[in-house]
Structures are given as structure tokens and as C-alpha cells.
Length: 78
Length: 348
Image 1: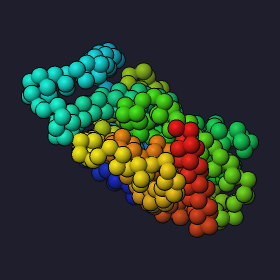
Image 2: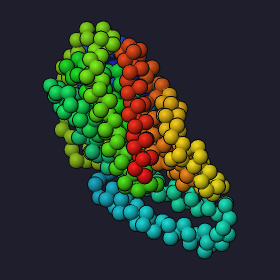
Image 3: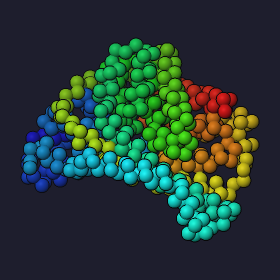
Image 4: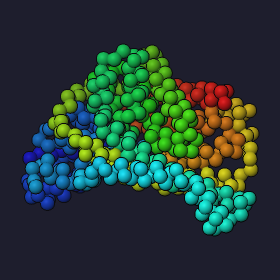
């Protein structure tokens, strides 16, 4: 699984990265995490609000910080 | 900049009857607040009615709970309203709209669309990319911070609904006309070239069904998010306001910010433009200044220039637009605010 965090460097974006890491750790799911800072790349996803969460190339969340439970659900854990 | 990006704390068990109960309770307190505070000060504490300190304490004890009740209720409602909007939907709505109608729509949507200035760049690119005219994009970028729900609440609470309405409508007017003027000036050449080279993808987020409970939750989230950020500014602002209310002599501000001092309007706008302050801390001070003889137009112009435009926002926008356009943008908005200031001083 490939997880990307789209963020312009805002506080919430970094928080999202930490939460995703925690979610992966707690569920034990194998995934690669990348943090995309480049605005041009972010725009390629059509996202206008950060932070955004992309899983396997699909935008799951944009413009808000999801809860840990939501992240776990999105990556397929319980 | 303070009201930024909603957090979702994941607690979804609360149901809709709790907020309705809380709101009725809040209304009840709100109605009896003045009597309660008077009873506490004159009845129980037996403070001297004519003393400066009594006036100061009374102002503080009355205004603080009042503002917080209003803030909580309105932010909650706004949070629910905002859950119906998103920048993506707003962009869709604005696509292909002609200039003037586009400006009106962009300004109005700017009020209700959740937006934080940390997203100003992707939003700007996203709008321009999908063919929304520059002027329309600017209408949105001006309205979104300028017409701020916290400011609206405070104006309503401290000055009454007329001032709140005037603030919202003049803010809209500035956003519409400034955007329209920028559109007419054909300033596209001052947008950084790379913006047009970006190939923005289509938004492909899976639409999850938003339930009624989710919207209530969005209301809670907005309250927690905003109140936890601005409460300290509000308390500080009311404390300063209370001190001014109690100790500064009547008409002290008349010569500085009064109607006679026409030059004070451009002056306060120039001072306010680069500053960014939280509307929350600013407005209670403003109320006290008004009471001491400052003119309403001057005060409103000051407030709008402080919360509507700021140096940090300009620096963020510098990444996508060139300096001449930033200067034109700031000057048009500044002139708009000054005109509003003059008009208000003239009417009242």
C-alpha cells in the first residue's frame, strides 16, 4: 500500500503524517509513506485544500485532519 | 489565519438533542445576564455605583459571558452550514460564470466556504487552472478572510444587528467591486507563468455520504477549534475594553478618531493593512473606543483593514502572483475600505 500525505508544510499536515504513522504501527499494515510538499505535485491530484491524504493514488481526505479511527479504517485496519 | 483547517476529533456518538438543549440554556443565560451581573455587583458585593473600578468590573463580567455564549452558538451554526460547502464545490459553481455575476457569487461563497489562508496558494491555482477569471478569484480571496464569522458575532453582540449587517454587506461590496476592478484591468500577465503550466488533475475523492450527525459533529468541531484558539484574545480584548470603558474620559477619542478628523480614516487603514490581529481581541477594544467618541466609520475601516488584509497573506500570495499585482490588489482593497469608512462617517 502506498500512502501519501499532501501538505504545504502547515502544522496540521505534519500532524497528519504523525497520525498516519501511528495508524500503521497500531494496525500492523505494511505501507510506504511519502509526504508531498511540492505544490505542483499536490495540484496534480486536484486537491485545493491541505492537508490531504492519498492512498494508492486516490484522494481520501482533503482539507481536514481525519481522526485516527478514520485513518485506520481507510487503510483497511480495524 | 487563526480560523484554520477543521480538526475532526472522531467523537461521533453525540446526538442532535444535546445542542438544542444547550442552545436554549444559553439563550436563557443570555436574557438574564444583565440582571444577574447587576445583582452580583450592587446586591451582593455592594460596590460603589459611581466608581471607575465598578464600571470596569461590570463591563467585564457582563461582556465576557455574553460574547462567549454568542460565539459558541454562532460558530456551531456556521460549522454546520459550512459542512455543506467546500472549496471544490465552490470552484465548480464558479466555473464559466461571467465577470460580474462571478464576482458576486465568489464573494458570497467566500463567506460560507471553509477556507484558511494556509490553503490560499493551492486554492488560487485551482481556481485559475479551471478557467475562473482572475477577478472572480480575487473576489473570493478578499471576501473569505474579510467577512469573518467571529467578527460578525462580536459586532452583533457588542454593537447590535445593524452594525453586524453593515459590516457583512460592506465587506461583500468591497470584495465584489475590488474583484471586478481587478478583472477589468486584465492583470493576468502578473500571475507567475508556472501557475498556468500546472496540469491540475480532476478531483477524484470518493464521495462519502455525509449524515446529519456528521454535520452536527462539524458544528462541535468548529466550536472546539475556534473557541480554543480565540478565547484568550477575547478575554484580553474585553479586559482592555473594560479598562477603557471605566477610566478613559468621555469624548477622549473624538479628536483622534472622531468624525471631524477625516484624515484618521486613511491613517487607520494604512496602519491596519500590514497588521494581522484576531478580530476576537480587536473588537471589544473597538467598542470601548467608539464609546469614547471614535467615529463608527473610522473604527470599522480600522477593523476591516486589520482582519481583511495582512502582510503574511501577501507574502504567501507572492509565490503565485508578481509584486505589481499584489500592490494593485492591496491598494484597491485599501481604497475600498477607506470609502466605506468615509461613507459611514458621513451617514452617522
